[in-house]
Image (cartoon, rainbow, N blue to C red):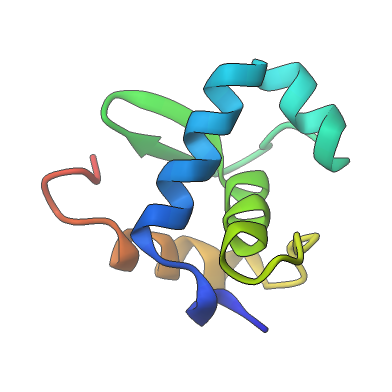
Length: 88
């Protein structure tokens, strides 16, 4: 299981869940902290990149990944699964 499991629709599902719950409740639910360096920007909204990737992985595989991926891998990979018109 890894980043290759994550697809566009999984990221969208994770961002929609975050919006429904609110940022703090979402982070608490999944045991993540706030982003310190990198955020995912999607449709003008900013998201904590590691928790979005971890939760998107859960949507893809059923297992929420506590972001064992190196941050440089995450930053390089997430834009690849977002259509250019959606990635800001």
